[in-house]
Image 1: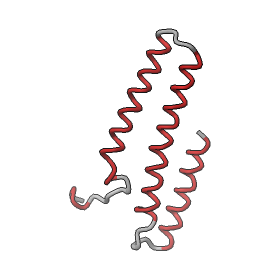
Image 2: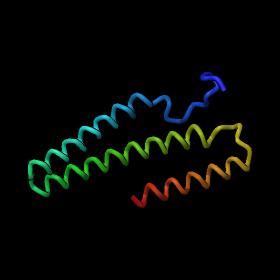
Image 3: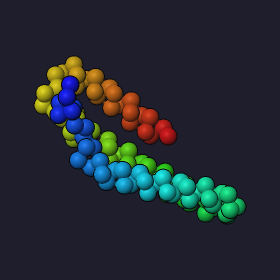
Length: 99
């Protein structure tokens, strides 16, 4: 399969924005590590960890939304493949809400 035959994922269009957001989250996590190293107040650390979790959740929900809009609604899916993808999606959502 050549590079041009590689299927696009739902998030491909938003890839640059997702990477930018993840890099920002990475910086927030480094900031939390520094806060702990500097013995910052517990509540301040907790607030920052909550902000990181919310940001990660937003990334995950965005990818999930694009998966449903792009991958799940592809008209070329046969019924068996659609059922497999539905089960896969259900398991992914279950893991997302458990975290």
